[in-house]
Amino acid sequence: LSMNWSTHLRWVDCLEREFFEQGDKETALEMQVSFLMDRTKPGPSHTQVGFYDYMVFPLLRSLVRAAPDAEHVLTGAISNREHWKELDDAREAEAAKAKEEDDAPL
Image (tube, rainbow, N blue to C red; front, side):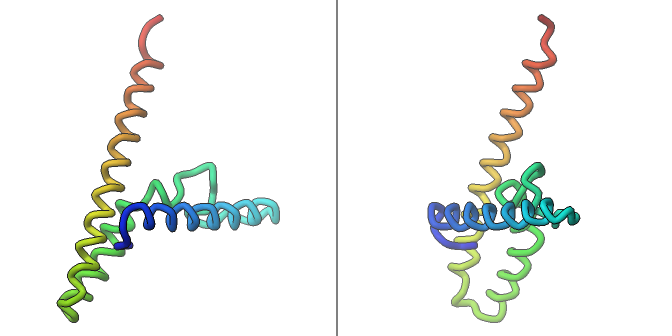
């Protein structure tokens, strides 16, 4: 959550692959695919901003109140959340541009 960006990104990639593999197994067993494990829907790499906002930050803020020396952990998490937000914004801009191009008259 608060590792340097390149290490964090590698871990999220591993997590996403593991989640999608589980979802594939659930699909093969004709089970309902668990949340974030369906590769046809947004996975962990597309839901990080919300995860940070609703899970990570409340936890880390409580940690820092109890152990102020852990402030660097919160600072690292804030930095990674900013990277995820930038990626989300870029994806949204790209999708909006593609939609405009699709909607443009021929």
